[in-house]
Amino acid sequence: MAEAATAEAFTRAVLRHRADLRGRLRRLFDGRGFLEVDTPVLSAEVVPEAHIDPIVVRVDGPTGPDCYLQTSPEAHMKRLLAAGAGPIYQFARSFRAGERGSRHDVEFVLLEWYAPGTTLDDSAALVEMICSTALDTVGIERLDCVAAFQRHAGIDPFTASDGEWQAAAARLGLNPPHGHTPTPDDFFELFLAEAVGPRLGHQRPTLLEGWPVSQAAFARLDPTNPRRALRFELFVRGVELANGWEEDPCREELRRRIDGANQIRIAAGRCPLPSPTRLLTAHGPSMPRGVGAALGFDRLAMLAAGAASIDAVRCFTSADA
Image (cartoon, rainbow, N blue to C red; front, side, top):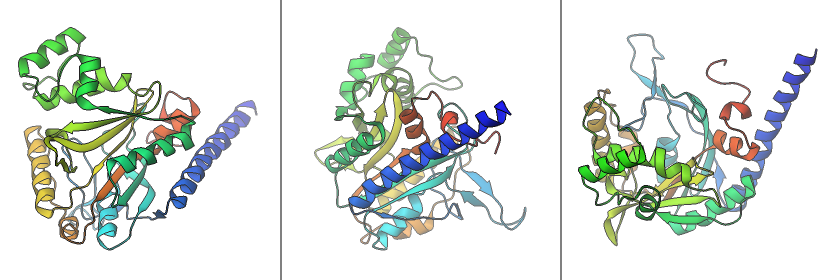
C-alpha cells in the first residue's frame, strides 16, 4: 500500500508540475499575440541535420516509402509561416534516434516558436520573460561566443589554429573524438559541451550569441560581420535549454545548408537524408524574416523542479513507455 501511495503521489505531482508550467507559458505566449498550433508528428520529409538521426517509419509495410517521426516541428511550422500564420508556438512531441541520458531521450517535448519580423534583441526580451515565468529568474546575460570561449577555455574559436585547439584541449584535460583527425568544429563542440556550456547561466540565464559561420545551422549571417551567425543558445545553471536564430528565408541558401549537413553525415558514416522538397518550396518571397527558437520543455521542467534528470519530471521514459 505504501509503495502504491508513493507512486500515486509522484504521478500526480509530476502531472501537476508539467501542467502548471505549460499553463504559465501558454498565457505568456498568448498574451504576446502568438497562436498555438499543432503540426504532424509523422511526415514524408525531415530536415537533414548533421548530428541528429531521425526515426524511420514505413507506414505501408517494408516495401513502402520511408516516413519520419519528426526531430522537431521546424519544417511544418515554417510552412505555416510561409502560408501567413504569423507568430506561432507549440508544445511538440519530437523524436531522435539513439538519444538517451539524464537530459536526453528518444521521445521528448519541444516548446518551439517563430516570431516573424523580430530580431535577436526582441528574442532576448522574450527569453528573459520565459525564464522569469518558469524559473523565477531575474534578468539575462548576453554573451558573445568569442568572449565565452576566451573566458572559460582561453581560446578564440574564430581564429584558433589546429595546434592551438589541441594545446587548449590538453591544458583543459579534454579528449577529442577518436576515429578521425578532429576538425575545428569538433573542437568547438567539445569545448562547448565540456568547458564552456557547464559554466554558463549560474548567476542568471545566459544567451550565448555570435556563433562561427560553420556552426550557423539555418541562421542568417550577421550583415555587419559575415564571420558571425545570428544564432543563440540559452544556458541555465550549466544546462543547454534552447537554441534559436534569425532565419534566412533564401531558398538557395537553405538548400546549400542542407547539402552541407548531408556532406557532414556522409563523412561521419551516416546515411544522407532526402531533401525536404515541400519546405524548400515554402522558402522564398512568402517566407518572412524573423526569429525561430526551440526550447527543451522536459529540461525546463527539470530545472524548475530542481531535479538532476528529466526522468524526475516525466511519468514515462523511452525505457518504460
